[in-house]
Each structure stands twice: as C-alpha cells, then as structure tokens.
Image (cartoon, rainbow, N blue to C red):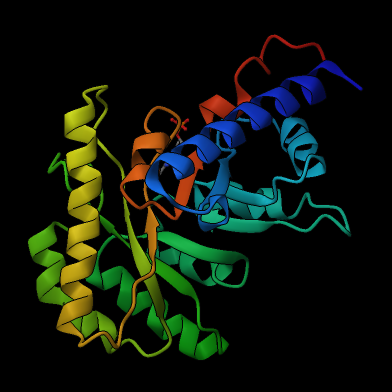
Length: 239
Ligand SMILES: *Cc1c(COP(=O)(O)O)cnc(C)c1O
C-alpha cells in the first residue's frame, strides 16, 4: 500500500466520520448526504486511488478538465461526474452525455441552451440552479430575485430535471454568516416548491465545502463538495 493510498484512506475516513457526526446532530441519516470528491486540484493518480477506495462521485469545476479526465477512465472504473463550475455555451454538447448532474446552471440563457441540446440528444439531464447568496458580483449564479422571476420559465424547459439548488458560501469562518447562507438557500427552495403547489420537489441542496460542510449538513445539505480536505497531505506523501 503506498503513501498516497494511506493518506487518502485516512482523509476519507475522517471526512466520513465528520459527516456522520453532523448527521447525528441534525437527526439525519448519513445516507441522506452524498459526498462529492472535488478533484480539480488533484493529480489523476490520486483520483484513481480515491476511486479504488470507493469514492466514486467526482466533481470538476472546469468542463474541459472533466472531459479530459473522463477519457482517462479505464474500463470497469465507474464514476459519476458532477460539473460544479461555470459551463460555457460551447461546452454544453460534449458535457451533457458525461455528467450525472450539472450543479452550476447559473442563468436562464444557459438553461435554455441545455434544454435545446438535451432535446436534440434525447437526454433529460439532472441540473441544479446555482444561487449567488453572498451577492458578490464576481460570483456566478442567479440572485434570489432573478431566480424567483425566472422560475416559471425554468420549469417549462421540459427536458431539464431540476433536482435542486446549489450555492457557494462566502469565504469566512463566521459560523453565523455561513449558517445564514445555507438556511437562505433552503428557504428559497421551500418558497419555489410551494409556488409550484408541491409539483416540483427540489429535494437536493448542494452546499458545503471543506471548511463548512458540517454546518451545511446541519442546515439540510444533500450534496457536499469536498476538495482540499480529502486530498490534504497528498502533495507531500511519496507515491
Ligand atoms: C473547488 C470547489 C469546491 C471544493 O472546495 P474545497 O474548499 O477545496 O473543499 C466546492 N465547490 C466548488 C464549486 C468548487 O469550485
């Protein structure tokens, strides 16, 4: 067993333990939280070790890197790809057949583009709508107001399976601010569901990263996106 393997095994066990702890505090089942390993900064050999260890939900933020890495998979290596970063219009076609979910549908224009190509390719992609709750102009995503006004049009995109909402919390360790953001996403979801008379369920909340996933779980996250915490120490471990 090599050092990378041991390091990843340890990190994965720690993260899973932390997930279980947060689930206990929130009275939730650990099965209700999907761990997505964010591989954007990881070397491919590390990712392969992680797959060996059974972490098969992988997240990439750049469409091009997701496409390239998907091509590196060996026969028998089964993973689910999650696109978690901005999707350029010209990358929609190659990305659609590869991904389990697109977490980062950040505009009505992009949703319509995905709808068009999904119809053509006869696919019904699962997507989450990205919301910018910290209102930082540099961040992608719908503002809550934009999302509320685009909601009906979004629901009319018949090939999209809109499974939930996604957000990135601001870069802070202030627990009150982080909780507030996660709660705001959940409440926005609840408002949208009630507007569709419960016909749209939006069960998924993709929120929580290395620094804040326990709080996110306590506030209802179903998909957490963990990068640095999973790969910590791999840089210095000898392969
Ligand atoms: C990089 C990234 C993550 C993971 O961040 P870590 O802090 O390394 O866990 C999660 N979500 C998105 C959208 C990212 O781009």
